[in-house]
Amino acid sequence: MTTDPYQTAQEAAAELRARTGVDSFGAALVMGSGWAPAADAFDKVLAEVEVGELPGFLPPSVAGHSGRVRAVRHADRDVLVFLGRTHLYEGHGADVVVHNVRTAIAAGAGTVILTNAAGALRGDLRVGQPVLISDHLNLTARSPLTGPRFVDLTDTYDSRLREVAREVDPGLVEGVYAALPGPHFETPAEIRMLRNLGADLVGMSTVLEAIAARELGARVLGLSLVTNVAAGLSDQPLDHLEVLAAGREAAGDVGALLAGIVGRL
Ligand SMILES: O=P(O)(O)O[C@@H]1C[C@H](O)[C@@H](CO)O1
Ligand SMILES: Nc1nc2[nH]cnc2c(=O)[nH]1
Image 1 (spheres, protein in one colour):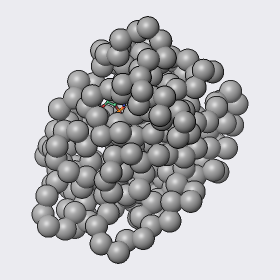
Image 2 (tube, helix red, strand yellow):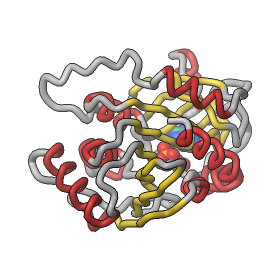
Image 3 (cartoon, protein in one colour):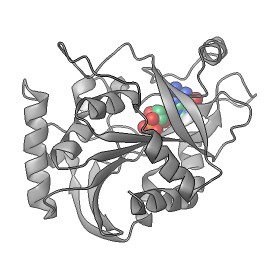
């Protein structure tokens, strides 16, 4: 990454325009663990690019996260779909983690839809259920911002976009998402602590991307797919393969949900 991550995002956006033939994207989606198959729910694939060929990107190193970004046309909208992401725990720093949203916004996206796989801390949430993120607890001890960038996070997860999502699926419930650095899962004591702090979901991504998107004035919608019951709340051990399997199971439903939302943007 050059010294200026915002400049690098502009360079990556210019390269994306050239390789996809799309001058400006209406929205961008980031597919979390297990979400990638849902990307097939959109009308037409215009182009697909290896992110490693774009300035500032590193290929993701986590199973279930491909290093590709897809330009799709859906309901007359051109949408950028990242079929994976870089996580803070991969050790490349916060700027690389949020480079996807910075690039997408530089390429015109005014709405960013962030998806992830998360553990459930609330009894009514079940594996395979998508949950609207109403707010987040950033427990990564990091920010993607450096310097006096005092960004207001009051309505980070856009309430109007949440209404749109509920028009598509009236059964959608909301939850507070807590992000930890990972890559380890939580101890049962940490899950009890997070519950007391007001978390309904726990994960290892999303929050830094949301902050970066809000700094640049984009609207954010966050969606978690519950892939497991959080540590200590069931007798099941936690396993990334279980996370991916739950994502595959839900891909049809969450794909239809995303397609419905994009069609209403
Ligand atoms: O990209 P997301 O947040 O969906 O990935 C989650 C968090 C970890 O990277 C992984 C753990 O299984 O899934
Ligand atoms: N931190 C964390 N991330 C997850 N991603 C999917 N499930 C979990 C979980 O239980 N904890």
